[in-house]
Image (cartoon, rainbow, N blue to C red; front, side):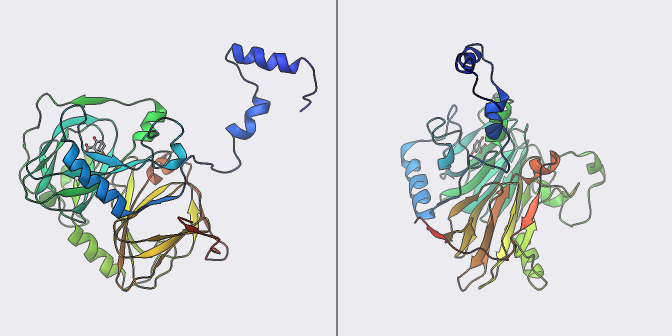
Length: 362
Ligand code: GTQ
């Protein structure tokens, strides 16, 4: 465009004063050729994360106001926005590690953010979601859909650690958040014990009234059944990009377990190396067990049990188990958002594997 007119400088200044803007100068920033997420590929070592999470147990107690004792992952790509960014791990997702100590209770509240949890360590704690008590054990996957009262109680004897993922940054950017405290500190347990298991024990059989259920009728997916499913799959052909993987789905609809948040567990046998691909949705990985590395846009991120790393939108990634045991890698992602909005795309890396051009942390 012809930008030589001497009037333009004062014209732009006047536009700014009137809170107006010229598209022709901004279109390259407003409409990038490809996704340019603020989120960056990054990895957090479990030794650091666990140390600070455990120390928080000596510093603060969960109570009304602060609500939860959680250390969240602050993706460096967002750090200039505000102290600790928006709590954003990716452009849409927040993630953190929550600690509940024996005898502690975290107060009941509800919000329009969706949450999922993946249990890392400890036994004896349970969460109450809309009157249902859900016991937590390592490897269990839990869903707390938007709008339901939820609180956590620890009736056991060892520290309990779990991984949380919520769609906080998505709702933040949409400007649509609601949050409410339950009138009492905790809510009563009103549903029969083992409610989820009684209703959804057998795959392919749906309680007849659940054709009316819109979301997450299965509140918990036990580690034992996830691992059994993966071991059976591992006798067959792997997926080229994900190895042997299962998605946690809403058994009433077959859709992702959460409305905005999907999740999966992958098994990579020793030596298994997946091919590289990229997709529009962003993914957060937590290494449940094992060691290996992932190559993310050419950079090799070595990982071990407990590490958390992030694959932002539209970056090439592949995974390699370099250990001697099966690796189990949990992941959570925003594909449900991309699919609902018609934004999802996927591409395979033309040569299968990326050349490694860098190492993390460098
Ligand atoms: O356990 O309800 O990590 O409300 C962030 C917000 C956990 C929870 C988080 C929450 C929770």
